[in-house]
Length: 190
Image (tube, rainbow, N blue to C red; front, top):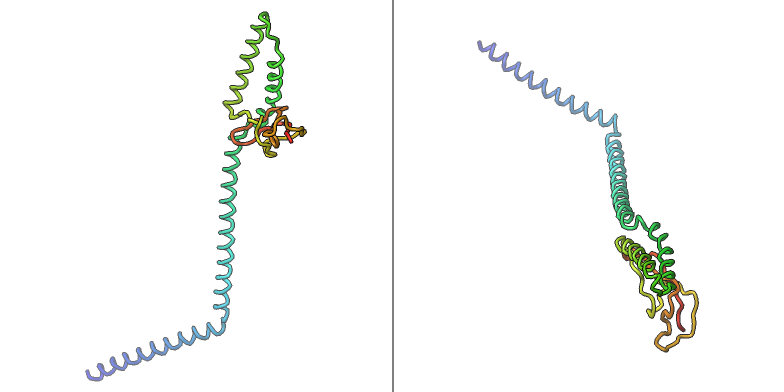
Protein backbone atom coordinates (compact mmCIF):
# COMPACT_ATOMS: atom_id res chain seq x y z
CA UNK A 1 0.00 0.00 0.00
CA UNK A 2 2.86 2.29 0.71
CA UNK A 3 4.04 1.56 -2.81
CA UNK A 4 0.73 2.63 -4.23
CA UNK A 5 0.82 5.92 -2.29
CA UNK A 6 4.35 6.44 -3.47
CA UNK A 7 3.31 5.83 -7.04
CA UNK A 8 0.43 8.21 -6.84
CA UNK A 9 2.63 10.84 -5.33
CA UNK A 10 5.21 10.19 -8.03
CA UNK A 11 2.47 10.40 -10.64
CA UNK A 12 1.35 13.71 -9.18
CA UNK A 13 4.86 15.06 -9.31
CA UNK A 14 5.27 13.82 -12.90
CA UNK A 15 2.01 15.49 -13.88
CA UNK A 16 3.13 18.76 -12.29
CA UNK A 17 6.47 18.49 -14.00
CA UNK A 18 4.78 17.81 -17.36
CA UNK A 19 2.36 20.71 -16.88
CA UNK A 20 5.24 22.97 -15.97
CA UNK A 21 7.16 21.79 -19.03
CA UNK A 22 4.12 22.23 -21.28
CA UNK A 23 3.55 25.72 -19.86
CA UNK A 24 7.19 26.60 -20.51
CA UNK A 25 6.91 25.23 -24.03
CA UNK A 26 3.77 27.26 -24.73
CA UNK A 27 5.45 30.45 -23.43
CA UNK A 28 8.51 29.71 -25.53
CA UNK A 29 6.25 29.02 -28.51
CA UNK A 30 4.50 32.39 -28.04
CA UNK A 31 7.87 34.12 -27.81
CA UNK A 32 9.02 32.34 -30.96
CA UNK A 33 5.77 33.34 -32.67
CA UNK A 34 6.28 36.96 -31.67
CA UNK A 35 9.88 36.82 -32.83
CA UNK A 36 8.90 35.17 -36.08
CA UNK A 37 6.05 37.75 -36.52
CA UNK A 38 7.53 41.07 -35.53
CA UNK A 39 4.75 42.74 -37.55
CA UNK A 40 2.22 42.54 -34.69
CA UNK A 41 3.22 45.96 -33.46
CA UNK A 42 3.50 47.44 -36.93
CA UNK A 43 0.18 45.84 -37.91
CA UNK A 44 -1.43 47.42 -34.84
CA UNK A 45 0.06 50.80 -35.70
CA UNK A 46 -1.13 50.46 -39.28
CA UNK A 47 -4.66 49.58 -38.16
CA UNK A 48 -4.66 52.46 -35.70
CA UNK A 49 -3.53 54.84 -38.45
CA UNK A 50 -6.30 53.56 -40.75
CA UNK A 51 -8.84 54.00 -37.96
CA UNK A 52 -7.76 57.59 -37.33
CA UNK A 53 -7.88 58.37 -41.06
CA UNK A 54 -11.37 56.88 -41.40
CA UNK A 55 -12.54 58.69 -38.28
CA UNK A 56 -11.28 62.04 -39.61
CA UNK A 57 -12.94 61.35 -42.96
CA UNK A 58 -16.19 60.53 -41.14
CA UNK A 59 -16.01 63.78 -39.15
CA UNK A 60 -15.39 65.85 -42.30
CA UNK A 61 -18.22 64.13 -44.14
CA UNK A 62 -20.52 64.67 -41.19
CA UNK A 63 -19.64 68.39 -41.07
CA UNK A 64 -20.12 68.73 -44.83
CA UNK A 65 -23.53 67.10 -44.60
CA UNK A 66 -24.51 69.38 -41.73
CA UNK A 67 -23.46 72.44 -43.79
CA UNK A 68 -25.41 71.11 -46.78
CA UNK A 69 -28.50 70.61 -44.63
CA UNK A 70 -28.30 74.13 -43.20
CA UNK A 71 -27.71 75.68 -46.64
CA UNK A 72 -30.67 73.77 -48.08
CA UNK A 73 -32.94 74.92 -45.25
CA UNK A 74 -31.85 78.54 -45.79
CA UNK A 75 -32.43 78.26 -49.55
CA UNK A 76 -35.92 76.83 -48.93
CA UNK A 77 -36.71 79.66 -46.52
CA UNK A 78 -35.46 82.25 -49.03
CA UNK A 79 -37.42 80.60 -51.81
CA UNK A 80 -40.64 80.74 -49.83
CA UNK A 81 -39.89 84.30 -48.73
CA UNK A 82 -38.85 85.69 -52.13
CA UNK A 83 -40.33 83.04 -54.47
CA UNK A 84 -42.67 85.38 -56.32
CA UNK A 85 -40.11 88.15 -56.67
CA UNK A 86 -39.97 88.01 -60.48
CA UNK A 87 -43.77 88.12 -60.81
CA UNK A 88 -44.04 91.03 -58.39
CA UNK A 89 -41.19 92.86 -60.14
CA UNK A 90 -42.92 92.47 -63.51
CA UNK A 91 -46.12 94.01 -62.05
CA UNK A 92 -44.34 97.24 -61.05
CA UNK A 93 -44.37 98.76 -64.58
CA UNK A 94 -48.15 98.24 -64.56
CA UNK A 95 -48.33 100.20 -61.30
CA UNK A 96 -46.18 102.94 -62.90
CA UNK A 97 -48.59 103.09 -65.84
CA UNK A 98 -51.53 103.36 -63.44
CA UNK A 99 -49.76 106.20 -61.58
CA UNK A 100 -49.24 108.11 -64.83
CA UNK A 101 -52.83 107.45 -65.94
CA UNK A 102 -54.23 108.61 -62.59
CA UNK A 103 -52.15 111.79 -62.73
CA UNK A 104 -53.34 112.68 -66.24
CA UNK A 105 -57.06 111.87 -65.87
CA UNK A 106 -59.42 114.71 -66.57
CA UNK A 107 -61.67 115.70 -63.72
CA UNK A 108 -64.93 115.99 -65.66
CA UNK A 109 -68.16 114.73 -64.19
CA UNK A 110 -68.86 112.64 -67.26
CA UNK A 111 -65.62 110.69 -66.63
CA UNK A 112 -66.34 110.14 -62.92
CA UNK A 113 -67.55 106.54 -63.31
CA UNK A 114 -64.48 105.65 -65.42
CA UNK A 115 -62.16 107.26 -62.91
CA UNK A 116 -63.87 105.41 -60.08
CA UNK A 117 -63.53 102.06 -61.90
CA UNK A 118 -59.86 102.63 -62.70
CA UNK A 119 -59.23 103.76 -59.10
CA UNK A 120 -60.82 100.53 -57.79
CA UNK A 121 -58.63 98.39 -60.05
CA UNK A 122 -55.54 100.40 -59.07
CA UNK A 123 -56.30 100.00 -55.36
CA UNK A 124 -56.83 96.24 -55.77
CA UNK A 125 -53.46 95.97 -57.48
CA UNK A 126 -51.79 97.93 -54.67
CA UNK A 127 -53.52 95.74 -52.05
CA UNK A 128 -52.30 92.62 -53.84
CA UNK A 129 -48.73 93.95 -53.78
CA UNK A 130 -48.98 94.88 -50.07
CA UNK A 131 -50.32 91.42 -49.20
CA UNK A 132 -47.27 89.93 -50.88
CA UNK A 133 -44.85 92.13 -48.92
CA UNK A 134 -44.23 94.88 -51.51
CA UNK A 135 -44.03 98.39 -50.04
CA UNK A 136 -43.23 101.70 -51.67
CA UNK A 137 -39.88 103.29 -50.89
CA UNK A 138 -39.94 106.84 -49.52
CA UNK A 139 -37.34 108.72 -51.54
CA UNK A 140 -38.40 112.37 -52.00
CA UNK A 141 -36.34 114.76 -49.82
CA UNK A 142 -34.39 111.83 -48.33
CA UNK A 143 -30.59 111.65 -48.20
CA UNK A 144 -29.24 110.09 -51.37
CA UNK A 145 -28.36 106.44 -50.69
CA UNK A 146 -26.74 104.51 -53.56
CA UNK A 147 -28.00 101.25 -52.03
CA UNK A 148 -31.60 102.45 -52.47
CA UNK A 149 -31.51 105.04 -55.24
CA UNK A 150 -30.26 105.22 -58.82
CA UNK A 151 -29.21 108.84 -59.49
CA UNK A 152 -29.99 109.69 -63.09
CA UNK A 153 -28.76 113.27 -62.85
CA UNK A 154 -27.74 116.05 -60.48
CA UNK A 155 -29.21 119.52 -60.55
CA UNK A 156 -28.58 122.62 -58.45
CA UNK A 157 -30.61 122.27 -55.27
CA UNK A 158 -33.66 124.59 -55.21
CA UNK A 159 -33.09 125.10 -51.46
CA UNK A 160 -29.94 124.92 -49.35
CA UNK A 161 -31.23 122.09 -47.15
CA UNK A 162 -31.85 119.85 -50.23
CA UNK A 163 -28.15 119.54 -51.12
CA UNK A 164 -27.23 115.86 -51.29
CA UNK A 165 -30.89 114.88 -51.08
CA UNK A 166 -33.41 113.57 -53.58
CA UNK A 167 -35.24 116.53 -55.18
CA UNK A 168 -37.34 114.54 -57.68
CA UNK A 169 -38.43 110.91 -58.05
CA UNK A 170 -38.62 109.80 -61.68
CA UNK A 171 -39.57 106.19 -60.92
CA UNK A 172 -40.67 104.87 -57.53
CA UNK A 173 -38.60 102.29 -55.71
CA UNK A 174 -40.09 99.31 -53.89
CA UNK A 175 -39.13 96.87 -51.14
CA UNK A 176 -40.05 93.20 -51.00
CA UNK A 177 -40.23 92.65 -47.26
CA UNK A 178 -36.84 94.10 -46.15
CA UNK A 179 -35.07 93.54 -49.49
CA UNK A 180 -34.89 96.18 -52.24
CA UNK A 181 -37.10 94.96 -55.09
CA UNK A 182 -36.50 97.92 -57.37
CA UNK A 183 -34.27 100.97 -56.84
CA UNK A 184 -35.84 104.40 -57.09
CA UNK A 185 -34.67 106.46 -60.09
CA UNK A 186 -34.07 109.94 -58.74
CA UNK A 187 -32.64 113.41 -59.35
CA UNK A 188 -30.21 114.59 -56.67
CA UNK A 189 -29.65 118.21 -55.60
CA UNK A 190 -26.10 119.54 -55.39
